[in-house]
Image (cartoon, helix red, strand yellow):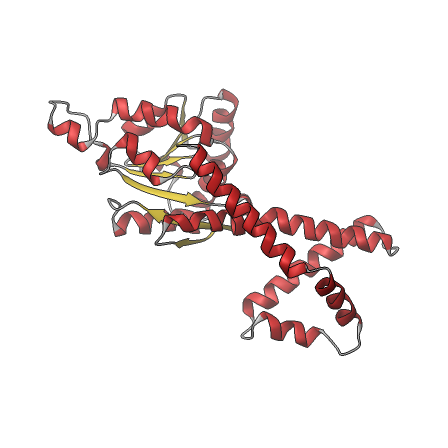
Length: 286
């Protein structure tokens, strides 16, 4: 028996497998991954020495905890396959099936926009489900994930899920699943905002005469250094800005231009648009 299984072996699954093994949360021999693409299975087996399979049901038979790492448009097919092979606790009581019930497993879903309600509608209301919104920096061990749990999930289930995603960055639990739309807008889509800001800084520096490669290098190091100062400082962002901003100086000139352009309002509007779109996608999938 394995301890953890993945249905879907794409980039995020690979990042999680790598982090879990590197942080000794699981041994390679304790993980199994199912993926329909043979080349991806060979890659995972070669890089991480984990068991791989083309059959989703092999994961169910082997692992008590399963991560759904498939695209949102594939989730219904996967859930239907599981529901047919693994009866709900209610159906199990009405049958003589010796197959374990859905409630005997922990299901962790990273399929974007797929609600707990949608998963339990197929697996049963007693299914232990944790929905997770991770983000792309998990692939370099600096991810940010937010988790919401079904009513049937135990404290031990939540603790395990947090441990899994802590292996690739930071992870938090949210009490209200609806908050995951805002989380999607902040940390899920957030890396793209940072990429845009870094590119804009570098492009502007090029216009001021700095060579492109050097401009990008300086922009990225500036962002990295500022992030570390902000993370470790005991004062808030407003005070950190005040420290850098000298009256009548260059920083003040730049910040005044940001304010004139409505920078903070633009950020707030963009975040709201992303959260609203996340809610729309969630409704469209029902």
